[in-house]
Length: 317
Image (cartoon, rainbow, N blue to C red; front, side):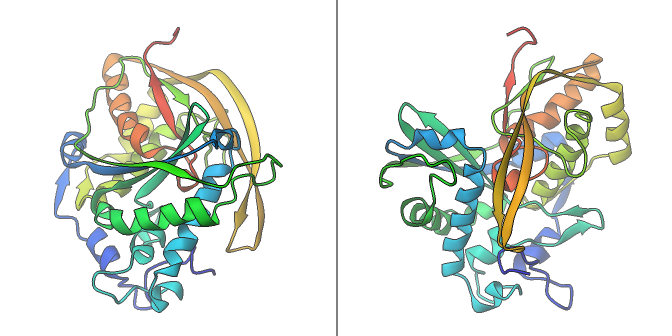
């Protein structure tokens, strides 16, 4: 197992400082309580003349890989060996990049960050969003990502496109405390990056996006020192009461490089608009869950930039 993909939990099962903190939430909250405590930091880089990179669905994954490689350069030997980092405070690699083990037998702690890429005219915007106490590492993360974007990242991949030498013309840091739970009454999820699910087809089983989103949010609640109170069985029932249907959908295929397996892995996901209908109370609850998902992405492989969406206000717009 490679250092990048190893589990931070040590041989005794106790793990490092980050895992111990994740396993000991200070309070139990509902969605409103989590929204009030929610905290995120966006670090946004503007790279001149490189907007064409957003057309490659594998590009965010390469950003992730370059970012992880830079974090490894500043990591402790123990963290690089897949063990808990003994430093105080622990190294950024050991906290925000290594896996932190499982919340329970069926659910791993999610990584406390996502990557988003956008175009601004001819320029490329790359956003690193950190959640909860991972924002304590914003400085180290910003330094590592800055180096990754200018000195390590392969912008072209297999596209054959020409990209100019990376030149960062701006960097912005935005801290956002709290989250407004104000989704549209009849939500439509307009996916900006491919969405996929583990082992099942998201086109055939879109309702699973609701339950997996709730599980992801419960994991990110721990990065806020909180335990989210959600009835999983009730959420499954909710997903079956709602009607999920694609207004349009386009399948995408790409490859990503696996350090663990030392090979390229074929990926497939869907871009499109997913509408949701049902009773007003059911839509209200689902919309509130997806309001968190709009910030942290949903579905599988969120760490590779997948599952990003915006709300479309009405079905017909």
